[in-house]
Image (tube, rainbow, N blue to C red; front, side):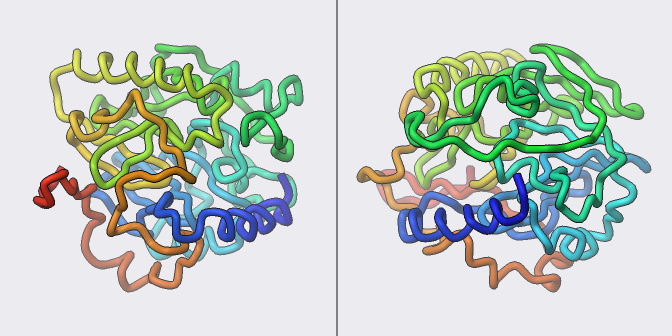
Length: 297
């Protein structure tokens, strides 16, 4: 997917979803001492750091401001040797594209064996109920192909790989050190809780809901606090909030609960500044309950 495809998607998606309250990306900054975030229009990419190792989670758009915003976080692109890919959509792998700035050309990428079929061209990614094909991604990065339940040890960092098909056929989420779950595009957080991700962008919505049921049970069985960090709508450590509407779809063009914190146009990132990135932490999702009481999730 070339840079022009990222730019075209920005223009099209901005017009299509403006005013729908669908996207609520985190601004560039830090969730805590281990997890940092860069905003690229409506998408977030993340960095997990422990000791001297930083793992990147997703590679965002083919986005010309990525190195600039990484500098706001004091992260050197040359220090990134490992990138976990949740799925291969335009806004999650663009920095690996052949005509990108090639900031991570020597990094190893990790993705599910099923998802890799999009990269090889065996399968074409389709959205809007199969009516539209996304551009194929071309990358020469070395790859490690993963299976459901596989455990990685990346320079002493434990990563558990969990397959959650539906949004794409091989979508994978990553649980790092049993504490941080990077969910990509499996969950959409509205003002009143989590839903299955945007219906018009899924390969199979029914499968997405089935995957969420399994994921919720998996996490509840661990009996511990886990931060669930999404690709487009922030984070929470409240499992009840995260899975409150897991059997329902985020249907972007149908009536739903208004999220008062969502920007009118998620592609307008004028409020994403270095000053804000270097000061404070990125708050977790606020739960606007049906009775109007605001609580922290």
